[in-house]
Amino acid sequence: MTVFTEAAHTAEFILSEANGHRSRENGTLASGENLPAGTVLQDNGAGKLIAFDGDTNTAGSLVTEAAGILLAATDATDGDVEVAYVARDAEVNLKLLTYPAESTAGGEEADTIASLKLLGIITRD
Image (cartoon, rainbow, N blue to C red):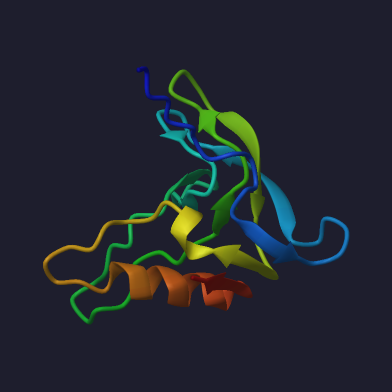
């Protein structure tokens, strides 16, 4: 029997968001990225979006905070692509998000949750 694996659907991770489209923004996904819906994003320093890396400095603080969560799977391997993302005021399902995996030092999930909370994006289990 053939087994199929279904990818995350567009905006499937959203539990609730602000009225209208107040929670959403448009941005540019940087060339080279190929990300599923629900990927936590950050600014690459040049005004383009990339996958959130969760990197911390020697003091343990995030180098770059999260910018939001990608709404739809997007392949930008051949060049920049315009995308929509949740940038503020939403509740999301943590289990449907893509973010840095826990390292041996740990803290990546907690840092991701805290960074999203700064945007008014609350994670639920």
